[in-house]
Image (cartoon, rainbow, N blue to C red; front, side, top):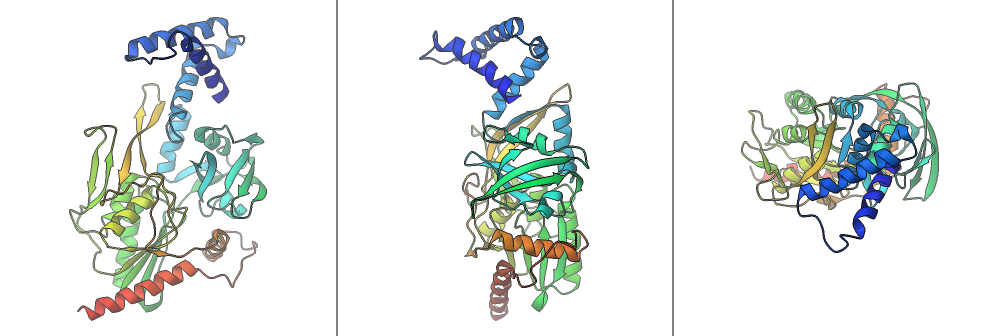
Length: 411
C-alpha cells in the first residue's frame, strides 16, 4: 500500500515541479484541481487496472498523505478503526507489542505482560527490523501493526536488534487473543508501604485503581509505590482519572496546545470526590513509560505529590484526534501537544526522574516473568533467576521511608 501511495505522490511532484518550482499553493482549490488531474491520469493509464480504481487510488493517497506527516497520524479503514477501538477496551488479537517510531526506527515501547511477545523475551527499546520477512526500514507504524495482528493461533516471524548489546534476535510467535488487566499486583510491602502496578491506561483503569486503593487504605497503608514502568499509555481520560485520585480538587493535571491559541486547547483538572493526597508517594518510571504514563507522572511530579524514581521516560506527548468517516473508516491526526502543569513539553523530551536508578531491562523482564509465574499467568517451565533484585523498587522503598520519617517529624 505504501509503495502505491508513493507512486501516486511521485507522479504528483513530477507534474508540479516544473511549473511551480518556486511557489506553493495558497488555496485548496488549486491544489485539488491538480490532484484531480493526477488521479484521472493514473486511473486512465496505470498498467494494472485492478489497482487503478477511484476507491483504491483515493485510499492510497490518503494513507500516504497522513503517514508522511508523523509516525502517529494515519488513515484507518473500517477494520483498522475497529481494532483501535478494541485496543482501548483492553482486547485484541496479536502478539502483544506496543511499538512506536523513535529516531526513525520501529521501536518497542513495551511488551504487554502475559502475551506471546512478553513470554518470547522481547524488551522495551528493542528495534524491530523485520516482520513476516519484510524489512521495517520504510514501513509505516500502521502497516507494522497490521502485520503483527492476525487471527489467534497463527504464526508471525519477527527479527529485532537490542541496542544495549547489538544482538540480533529472531522469533516465531503464535498470535493470541490479548486481554489485559491494567491494574495488577496490589499489595502491602514492608512498613505498610503499598504497591500497585498499572500496565496500561484503558477504560476501567481509574475505577480499578480506586478499588485497590480502598482495599489498601483499609489495611492502614502509610505510603504508596505506583509502578508505571513499561506502561505504554492509553486513554487521556483514563490518565486524568488516575491522576485526580492523588490530587486535590481543582489541581491542573495536563493541558494541550494546538496550532493556534484557540485550536485543540484542552485543560484537565482534578475533579471527583475521592482524593488520596495524605500519604507519601513514589512513581516508578523507565524508558517504556510513555504517553498517559507521562501525563500522570508529570502532573504528580509538578505538584510535588510524588517523586519519580527510575529512568527517563519515553517522550510521547502528542494528541491524536480520531475523526470518523461516513463509511466506517476514520483518520487519526496529530492536532496538539501535551504539557505538564509547569508547561513542560513531553513530546521528544520525556521526564527526568527525581532519583535516577538505572536497571538492566533484562533484569526487569526476569522480575516480571517471575511474578507472572507466581500469578499463574506465564509458563512455569520458563527459566527465572531467583537472585535478581528489583533495585528500582528498593530505591523507591528507601525514598518513601525517608519521606515517612520526615512526615512524622513535621507533625
